[in-house]
Length: 157
Image 1 (cartoon, rainbow, N blue to C red):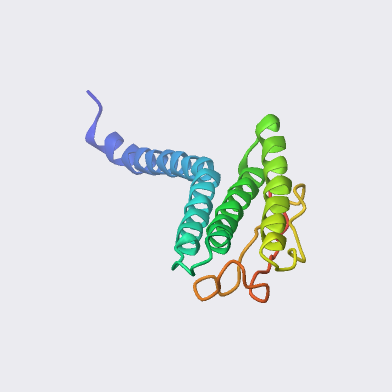
Image 2 (tube, helix red, strand yellow):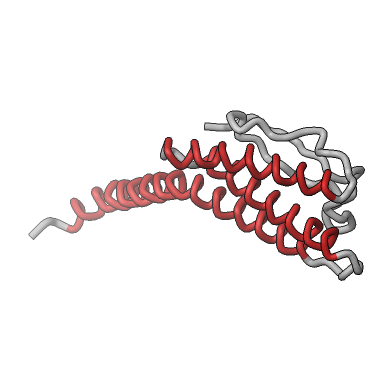
């Protein structure tokens, strides 16, 4: 059986080693979860923004109401595809995300033109992996050409 003085001498070393090991595991776990947590948060924000913007009071013009609801729906798809480009690593899904960005933006522009509004002035470059945001989203209708803007941030890796 070890002597009490030996236990007292090694106990602080063992406690320090255990704490350091636990901290290292915690840091590694947080680093591994960080992109997943950021991806989930970005997707949740995109979906919340989309759902709020899709709520439309009927205007009496079915076509305009349809476009007013579908434009933020398509923008939500763009925002989620941008998150895939930022955090995803599967090349097939990244290519699909790029296609979603291009095709959904084209459909947004087609809907805007169909109801007499100009096409969007900016579209995200699918390879940039930037974020699309809508300024004053809560007050703006998706068909208001003066409030629909995009900002881009460089892809971080």
